[in-house]
Image (cartoon, rainbow, N blue to C red; front, side, top):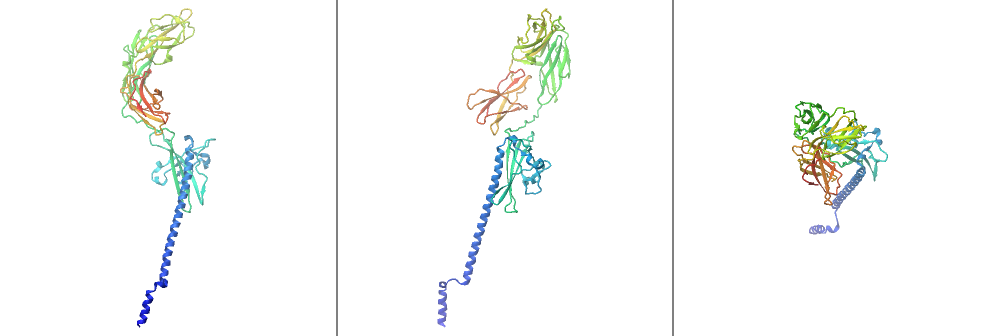
Length: 495
């Protein structure tokens, strides 16, 4: 009995030297199988992920290729080729995985944001830009030829739409180009990649804010043509933010007309110089008067038919309303005249001069309305009816000066928007603003006048285009009156 126990105990002590039991071998095999399966699963997932990444990179490259082609086109040529579309229109697709699902075929609009804009209504859709093909002008094609990478086929769709900046102005502010690439390997899992880019013609739209304060009208001296004691007059009045509603007249001899309109004719009882004034009203009831502008007319009885000589016409500086110089050119015309006489009052005549069509003449000194009379004389010494014309001599610079000039350079540096505060009050003979610029790189270049269309009041704005994007500039603004006199300069702004 003791020997049997010893034999059994000895056998257990040396069990490891005989190897694994069957149970232990089975357990070890199961552990190895589980590990191998996990490694296989990891390798499979890695291969799938790598394949998807390659497909996305291929789709990205296809979309970028279309976008680069769009960037190579002129802004005017950014449009879908109408001749490549069936029926000339972009179709709608009932398949939600097709990019054309977001096309409204009837309205010819496209929703570039897709599902993210569901519920946004019609504001999500932008008008498609489709134009006929022009020979020699490349355009974008809506559906490109498919391309393949490995076993995957990619389809490319392109859309060009108008973008409205909701600035109260044009609804065609920018163009948007959208490229969409779709692929579905492994089927049936459709995938899609979309990129968009905005394109501009370089102009930054802006809207001049409406002023809540009415700007009063302005009025200058009327245009005057005298024939003996009768004068014909045309008022010179304007309103920057409305219309002229009423014009009153005072003729300087006690006669007046209320709400007489733009044109008037008046006959004086006797010769003399008379002061004419207007009071004007705009459509908001604001008024202005030219009573302080010394608008005068001189009439005489020297008109009529003369004594049988030739008649003719006179125009000072080809009919201009203002002059800044006392020396002017007379434009004369008379058939049969060999001589002429000039007068400042139609009563006292100068010496007979040889007839000329464009003689120089010096107006009487002092600012104000100047009337020049002429009568033409033939070879027999007979003269015709007196003709006359008037012009306003204005040699004084406006006292008004713009203030608070600021400049905002465009992102592309090719233009700048200038704005400033208008002088208050504006002069009665206000003629507008002039803008001057100079380049400061290189420095010390002279200022020169530039085109800048002014809008708005009392905070006028204008845009200066055609700038060099590598150059810095300085600007200032001045007031110009109707005669062309220039007032003092505003502050200088650098952009």
